[in-house]
Length: 556
Image (tube, rainbow, N blue to C red; front, side):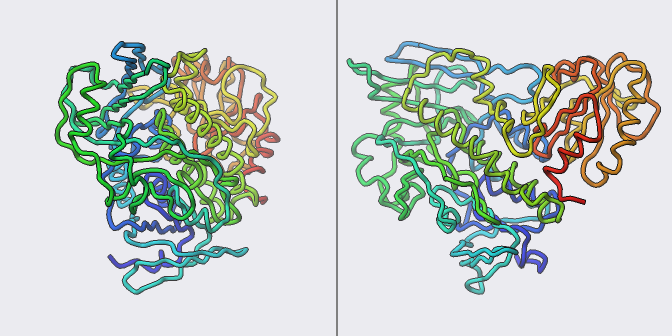
């Protein structure tokens, strides 16, 4: 397929077309930013590497406009079962508060990539397969990259920014000279994507351990359900398969950088159906028959994180920035949210509308998240059998990535409002029960936010609520113009609104007031394009709003 001239010199070059790079490319295309997405592989790999999709990632895909296809392809994760030496130790249910719009899901990575790639193509983009980044250099105005693999030989590409989503052995990370400190687990594991016939309850992940006389784990089986009655099984690798680990051309190789992480290449002996069945026979709490092995591999786990998420006009995201155990399905989801955080900032920078320090906020916001995830997953992996957390509800929200926030970040406007509800830097929660005069059904807040960039939600209640909304809209018209959209939320006791200065929804069930802690007080909530609160202003006033916008946008 020939490449159009408009993309020969893109605004952003994205390297690596896994879920993280695809998310970056989709978000750039949605905003009309010229981008190219290249990947060294000639075709998508058929591995179910990352399979857990967290509720927060589904919220991200909702706002991106592609969640429906994921919901139709994925399976619901209902809970997990833990067995130790054949005895059931735990049966946990994955139940979230009713205001959270999505649950936990499982989807093989090859399906996640397929759906995101198809969405990218609908937006007019594509993956340039078999195209590898060989080198790059940056200057004050942009980045010059050399690509290999095209039909005409090496190609020099000039872009405004470069985003490395190119995995654990990232050339972009190496080219920036970033450190990647950490270590590796001594144990090897084997994986298989296989059909399992057993009578365990559907939708539940299984963790079955065997402890020796000293209490140490000497055998382990983990099964995560996939669509179509399949499971992604992982287990300790037997000595016969462990020999020669990491010596073949897979992403689990050291890659010349000392990082051993991921799947073995094709030259070593791969686990057979019989290898997997023998472990299942030992550890499954119910008789189980395996069949239809789609793929298998041996893999190793490292835990590392970069010292910076970027430098100048070049950034890293996903496995290029952080790698860690797969415990809790945090890796891919964290990487997707890296890209989601970064791209709206790049889009503003490309358009000349960003504050000079906006893109630097990516490191300030996302590296603490990466550090927390790496630390938590390493602790959980070493513990093997996790006990009940002190606060199970908070623990579940953390695993769902709904507690990720940026309260201490540079884009967060401190709030003088000490009331309940989310603070600046927190995720903007969804809520139900918003009504209009036209729709015969209530909307959710995420329906209102979908398709918009920066949104200012202005809440008011009481007989003069409409006048409050109109007055604030008039006072902030010059500030908002071209920067953010205002939407009004009227409390349940507000009178009819007849102004027309801004779209208005009624909080008919009081859910918005409760979840946002508005409590009848006029309050403005600035919601960023990635769904986090940048400011909470009560009472609404132009001055604090101008202060917040000055942290994001270029001076006028």
